[in-house]
Image (cartoon, one colour):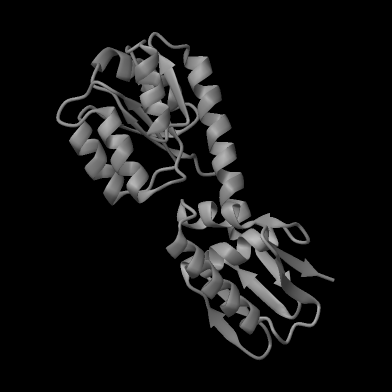
Length: 227
């Protein structure tokens, strides 16, 4: 079984050696002591999780995390820092980190955290990659693909996200605000109009499926019904 690949960024040589030595018993660890070089490495190679110090040369851990999140919303990020202020921890978590451990930390705790977040990440990947059955159609969310024996349709990213949201909540009323916030991050007028267009397109695609309906719930939202 291949080991999960960890990007570990720490400029303290002694701490980096001790931590890497322990982590390498369980993971494939790529250590870097410079923030800018670490981010460049992240962009070029594939990793399963990032462990970041905050105080780093050229580019600090907060900056690295910000740039990572622009490119990958799912990869787990753990901060390791001597900064003990609550504000620093909150800043790290707001940037999208999964956890923030204060130095000196327990190597056993770090390994446990890494294993937990890797497991959670794998579950998310498996969930996103699964296919759904909708009447005669098979929907592959990860590939934006809706197909049956007669046709194969490629949906837009947002159409796929909307269809997945309905399929994860079949026979359940979804409030309009929840749908808009999930897909657009807001519920303003223009997003609302876009949602109506996407609903109409999905209804048109699925119109031949007698057992599949997207019902309008007045003044509340929508419900996908599958008999």
